[in-house]
Length: 405
Image (cartoon, rainbow, N blue to C red; front, side, top):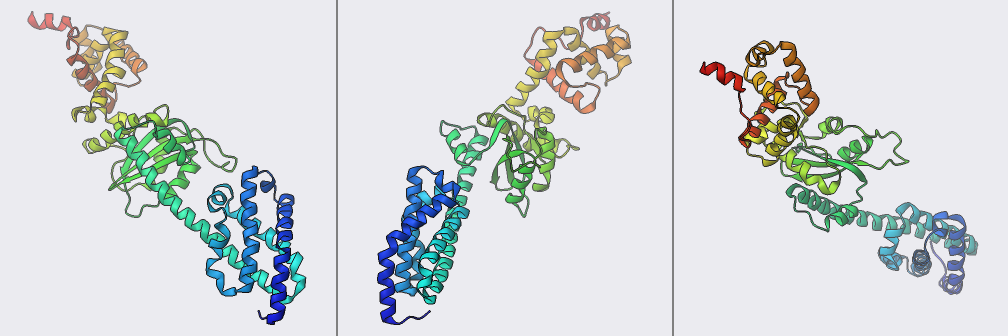
């Protein structure tokens, strides 16, 4: 692109005279052709207008000195960089550039072929500059989000929540609502956090991810349905969600904490999941993933107060409040190696009576004493419950009378 010095000086003077008209025409075209611009609040429209005006002014300066390319981005976006990045996406910025170039080309391209070429070259430089600005902003935001997410997950794990936690969660763009559960496993050697998030979105959940050395923690919450995620599965149970997220974890145990009502209560699920993860090796054939409540006996033996409390409140107390016969029958059934006949003989009842009472036990507390794993859970609950209850005896009175006789 070359021009006679006299012609170039005349062109520059002409461009400076019409720069105001170009800016006005550009704003009018933006208002007519871009719906998102016309719907903006006045302050944001003004910010976009400043950027458009800066672009025209910068083009005139660049036409005067094409070697000034390195400072194009700073020259244009310095007008309102923060406001622009917050209110206008990269796609919208490129639309703004396209409209501005089109209006400018319509008004001045006929002046000379060299001026038209200058417009095309300059628009290319501006497009690259815009992409660079947004890329830097995205990188900075990504690093900030990662630090903030790690802080939130750490607060949930330690239970040291404060009044700032909800605002931090909101700043991360958390879309979860309703129940939340915490999943704890090992970090894979090649951890792909993006793939894990994509899988979570397909399952209709939002996740907070925390990497703590070899330990990988996911805080899982059901996300609000999005019009763009029609293929996302909704309302899957948390154990099924954990099973589908399992490939994103490294080898070893994977423990799912119980569901809690909301994200602010997630520390309760985290406590259970972490306690279960610490003792999962004690269950030789533990499934992957395994629920923390299925590890209640191991957690209780390790001294976990939450596990002891859960066993007593969800098993022992409901049974004792419902019927002492159920407690007595369960004790005898477990002590006799889960034999119906031996239990019936000890209690002087028919085996069908034992079957009926065991069925009632399952209905009251949701655990089936006839299964080996659940039998261990129930026996641990009975032991812990009896330790704190003087009025309950382990063996029925009839048995003591028979032995003493």
